[in-house]
Length: 166
Length: 106
Image (tube, rainbow over all chains, first blue to last red; front, side, top):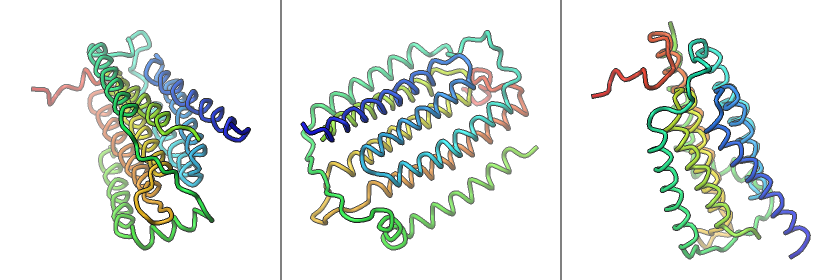
């Protein structure tokens, strides 16, 4: 194994650890505000995983949209709604045992599929600059989904304002 | 190169943590955070398959990455609508505890 490969492994395990640790804290933290901050850490770990996978543009979008927009939106929502959430109330609801069992069973099933399937792996060779290609693809092959996504965002924007208005 | 299975296991674990968060938390905002974690897990899978499984004879294409971009767009729209709903519920019922919001339960 070359040094570069070893470093890739190390980076993968560091970012996977950040991701999973952050995720577990999101599920278990008592204070919702702290859980939201741990969720930001988890998103950062996912961005690192994208870097390891050589998808730099997606990693940048992850940091900008998830950490910069969605997580901040969630922090705002927590601050607007927290008053009546008493700190003594348990963070889990009455069905947490069933929920945990379902999540664990699903993980076992997914792990069986992931490890048992013979994936047709043929890693792509990345050549040239990727970001201009993404732009060209979005404006040619995927122009219809691209425009529909903009329409969806507009509808979500108007809908959110209408729903949240006093 | 890191085996594809590592990424799949990471995504499966993150998805199940998100599922548990969405099923077991009491705060509606935390439920929404669980859904965001699940969407992130799906995106890890999309990017990992883009990187490791070549779909056609073409040298390389970007379908997986573009799919991930659309998933991120949808997640942003979903977060905005979900949080607007939570704020509307909070205004009318003074709670974000999902166990108190059972108006539509049969």
